[in-house]
Image (tube, rainbow, N blue to C red):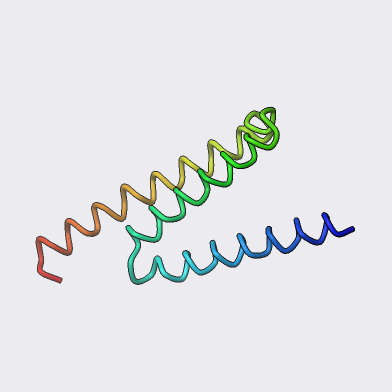
Length: 88
């Protein structure tokens, strides 16, 4: 049960980090989304190092998450450009 508790604590910490990134996105969307993409990529890479077949496990969900993060990144960049053009 020690391993299960460790996994639970790790997953809870990651969930809190993503929650905090979501809150931070209200003030600094570009930085928060980039951080989220990097964190998600690192989590996937760690999973692949531990179990290479995990790359294909849940591949559709992984593609959806990455797609929406990239869509958010593009939107945040456009919003920054608009703010710069209007000196906001």
